[in-house]
Every structure is written in structure tokens, then in C-alpha cells.
Amino acid sequence: MARYDIRLRDGLARAGVFHTAEEPLSLPAVIDPEKRFADLARMKHAHVPLSAPEGFVEEYLPDYETVVAVHPHSSRTALSGDVVMVGNWHTALGQPGRYVRWLQEMKERVQPDTVWYAPASALPSTVAFLIFSGLDLFDFTAVDLMTARDLYCTPEGEFPAEEWLGGGGCPCRGCAAGDLGMHNRLALAREIAVATRFLARGQLREFIETRCRAHAPLVALLRLFDGAYDFIEPAIPIVRTAQFRAYTAESLRRPEVRRFADRVTGRYVPYRTDVAVILPCSARKPYSGSRSHLRFRTAIRDRAHEVIMTSPLGLVPRELERLYPAAHYDIPVTGYWDREEREFIASTLAAYLGRHRYRRVLAHVEGGSLDIVADAAARCGMEIECTCRGHPTDAASLDALGAALEGERRKVPDIIRGCLSWQFGADIDTRGLMLKGKWMNQKVVRGKEQLFSLDPATGFFRPTFAGWDLIPEGYRIIIDNFVPKGDVLAPGIVDADPAIREGDEVLITGDLAVATGRAVMGAREMLKSSYGVAAKVRKVHKFAPDSP
Image: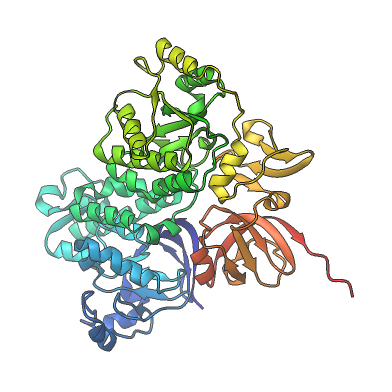
């Protein structure tokens, strides 16, 4: 029986090994289809146009022995381990609006642990985006057609061969031999390998943002993908260890950005709501390690709640500054805020201030940043006090900030409450809880009992069994009647909280045992997959058998 062992995920993109009766195939990959899917070669002119109406599709969509042909307007689905083939997909690349809609219709109908094959669609200029879209398997048909047209294929596009072949720009064997066909095939295989490496690093999105610049339809596709938030976000991991590089305008629309902002404005519970100080961000992450924020904190002395205003995340309360992606992003600093940045940050700040009605709001920012704060305050009917007297780190500005907080009570920030509310959506009572240890080995205790440990790479809290008792609901996986003796596989899962994303901490419960662990799949994939590791188990507690 064939199975797709998915070992890496990055959004919709996957990498793994496809096991069949033949030699295992590492994916993503490019193949000669005649060798693996012999029946496809015997059925010519069988692909149904993607825009064909439902009745036509149902009548003429072909049946194959080795693959399952699917179509946006067909109800046909596939089983775990099947190869799913979507014909004519190259025509969708020029129709960005339909591309996203068609992909969503098919992906939501077909099981996740299937292999997606897009025949005659992949060029070096498009294959990275196809992988980003969740397609796994390709062939050489498209590049061979380019060869027949005497076109030289590169990731930046297709060009007349006489301008490029043998010009010294490519060191491949094909160029050295003057063989255009060999170069085009090698260029496709090389681009797949490069995209797969970025996928493995958790930075395929950054790679796509650079690759799509030469092709207007791909830029449009990326923007439309981000607009389909409800479809894309469940596939986006909650945390990565790789740096979040926000180098383009599209970075503002990344699902991770919207999710972080939504949790700040919807889930997060601040430890105080009497006085807030809005501060500028810093190049160094976390912010509190920068010289500017050391000066800010010296002036504030815990007399106000510190909220950092930044692009692309919008707002980062001080308690959340070590969480992904707040401690992991990088952005070019120009001092200029474009219109989209202004609108996103202002609307996020207005939503936050509208939910948490501070008695006073101090804005220790200047220039365009101050305009954004004023806009947000006007939207929610609040007054702001500006404490800058020049640059925020000038002595006069810091003196004004300290003076404005004169007489305000000091209150130690509650990192535990803030992070847990953002991470789990639970507002827990933190009285009696203490955060102990140095950053690389911190834990939350109540007396001598450990409740949470901290992941130093991501800032996330990892609950013990006692810690889960403080989180009343959510992030639970229900398993069948077995005791986990290793990782929990998808077939053993009965139910899962829809909020679970790859990388989330989860509590695994069943009639025979309870376990703590980390999700390797999102909830939808867990429930629909017939193979694969769904959660990495950290600790297991086996229930004692019932007394006779």
C-alpha cells in the first residue's frame, strides 16, 4: 500500500518520502511520468479544462489506474497514499483569483496525506510557487516545450536561447555542452532542490517573496493567498525557530502577522490597565536587551504598562516580546511608514485600546509614529499624552517620561499571565506562581511544584500535567483506547481542538492515559490523515486500572 510520509511542513508546502511498491521517492520531485504512471501515456488529450462546468467535468473527467484525477468542479476525492493529479494547472497560474479558489476547493475535499501531481506545469520560474501551493510532484513536459521553442529557462523567466546558452551565466553540464534541453531540465531540478532547502529551514515564504518579483501573476497570487486567511492560516505553524524576514510589502499580510495581532487584540490580557506607555521598537530582539529600551525601562520603573509599536506586527506588549515572531523578526529600517503600515498599526492599536480602557495613555514616540498613535486614539475616543522632547532617547524626553509617571504606582509585569493568555486563550489566576531560573532554563512554579517550563528558542510555555489543570479548556487531543509509547499517530486520534496548529503545546487524553506534547500537524490534518506523526509526546501518565 502506498503512503506519503510527510516529514516537513511549511504552510501548504510539504516534503517527505512517497513509499510505493517501487523505489521510494523523495518529494518534492520532478520525474519522467511514463516510468511511474504508464497509463497516462496511453490516454492522450484527456485533461478537462479547469473552467469547464460541473456537468461536463463529471462526464469527461478521466479515470486512471495509477493516479486520481481531480478537478475544482468535481466531487471526486482520493484516499490516503493516492497520487492526486490536477490537469491543466499551468493555465491557472495566469488566473490568480481562480487559482486560489480552485486550490481551496480541491484541498478541502482531498485527504492531506496524498501526493499532488501537476503535469506539464512546472518551469524554473514557477515551480517554487507550485510547491508553496502544496503541490509535490512535477514532470519535464513544460521545460521540454520551452526547449522546442528554443527558450532558455531560469528562475527569473524564459529567454531566447542564443542570448543565454554558453554565455557563462550558468555552470551546469547542459550549458557546458551547449545542450539547451539538458540545461532546462537541470534548471528545473535545481530550483526544486533550492525551494526544498528553504522549506526545510522554515523560510519558504521569504524565498517566494524574492522569486515572485519577476512575475506579476505570482505577486498577485501571493497577495490573494494572504487574503484567503481562513484557508491558509490553519496550515501555518504557530512557531518557527528561523528568523522572520519582513523585507517586502507583502510581509504585512502574512498569516503569522494577522494571527499575532488578532491574539493581542482578542486573547491577550494585560496585567494592568491604568497607565500605558507606547514605545518605539528596536533593531535588537527582544527589545528589552537594546540600549534604547534599557533607558525607557529605567525612566518608567514599572509605573506603566509598556506596549511596543512596530511593523509588521503592530503591537507587542512587553510581556510578549520573547514569543515568536516578536523576538524573531527583522525588518529594513528607513524611518518611513507607508500607508498600509500606518493603517494596519493604527487599526490594531485602536482595537487594543478600545478593548482595554486605560486611564492614561502616554505616547513616547515621534514623527510618523506619533501620528499613527494619534489616529488610533481618535478612533477609540481616547486622549494621549506625548512625552517626547525630540528623539525618544534624548535626556529631555526621558526626563519628561519619568515626570509624567510621577505618583503612579509601581507594579511588576506579569509575564506568566500575559503569555498564557496569548498562547492558550486562558486568563488564569497567577497568584502564588513564580518564574524562576535564567532565561535558558526558566520554569514556572507554585511552591515546589513545577507548572510550566519555557522553550528558550520560541518563548512558549510548556505545561506540565499540573500546568494543564490551570488551563480549563482547549488545545486537547482525544485519542483512542491506547497508552502512547512514543509519538501519537494520526490514525489514533478521535478528536482535536480546531485551534491546534503545528507547534502548539497540547494535552493528549484518552481512557487509558494522558500525555503532554507538541502538535506536529494542525487539527484538520490530524483528523483527516490516515498516516503520519500528529504529536510528539513529552510525558505520559497511565491511569491505574479500575478496581474489581
